[in-house]
Amino acid sequence: KRTSFSKRQWEGLIEHCDDLKIEFISSPFSEEAVDLLDKLGLQCFKIPSGEISNTPMLQKISLTKKPVILSSGMSSWLELDNAVKLFKKNQNKITLLQCTSEYPCSYKNVGINIMEEMERRYQVPVGLSDHTLTNYASFLAVSRGASVIEKHLTFSKKMYGSDAKHSLEPEEFKDLVEGIIAICLLYTSDAA
Image 1: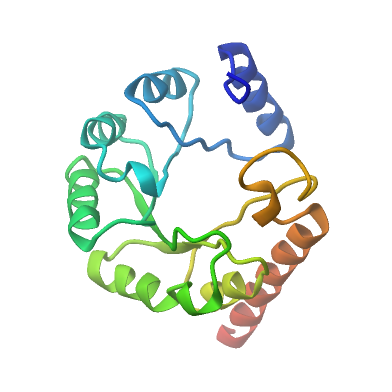
Image 2: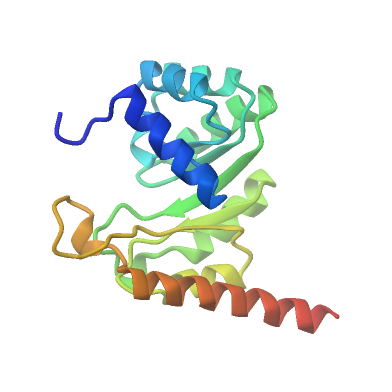
């Protein structure tokens, strides 16, 4: 109950994102949550790695026809195959995130090569759900074709919650954004 939101609180989060011109994205963990988020006008569903085999929920999301960001995490190739097939069948726009379910994730287990294999295998945009304690893996992923980076953000690593101590604080997140912008500009200037 401590971490659950009322419908009004969800609406407040969405309004705040709208005010800041930030797209509100959320991860449902049940079919009821899919219904709620869809009614609230969510434009893109983020599917966490632990839910990739939740076929009834994935089916419900696919029927919304909304874009999906799908995190691979602990998934097998077969589970990814099935999920991608379902979303392609229902014509959802898909972005796959390479995700290593390790907190914090060591550099040797990030799996940029897996991200690249997902792009070849499924012919969809890819990205990285980065659980390392620095920004370096995200920078490499962007330089290797990632169109989405997921990184946890906290006001303080001392806050309540299982993710806080593995998250970026605002100054670190600012460095992440500035680094990604710089990498994109470098690629754009090289292409010109």
